[in-house]
Image (cartoon, rainbow, N blue to C red; front, side, top):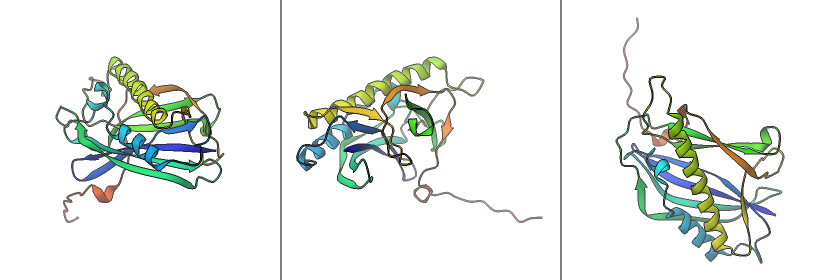
Length: 214
């Protein structure tokens, strides 16, 4: 058996790169092995899938989705079986100015019916623009719309996979390397507090100021 790791790829101002990495569990084996042309077609479709309004609005003009990578990995060993990386035909970015730091994100929690840490996952969606209330949090209605669009986006990615491999179904899942299991997601959750995610700091140049002490 195998699983598919989807990486939604993007860039930010300052040459930073980011990825959001949902996992999908095939309902069966890839017949005769992974067909590279089909894998390329799936990656290209995902790289060009329209990003729903309430997701892309969080990007700001300083963040963009630029491509997608698919990795098919062995369920028992995590060994790489097939890979395809495709660029978007044009970068997809938000329309508003940047109001939050580059590593700000909204966290989407992936819940399964498997108890414990092996049954939970997280995705950090870039959030460089969002209106905050006087309590410093995002409005609950905004999060509700965001979560609805995230569900639609993930369902669309599943459709792209199923279109490229029509004899196989795919389920959104959480991959646990600790237990070697891939339980299926039954619920998505998102909170209204902006989180941060450390990414590739070598790709985010900083300018430093220094003072003598004492």
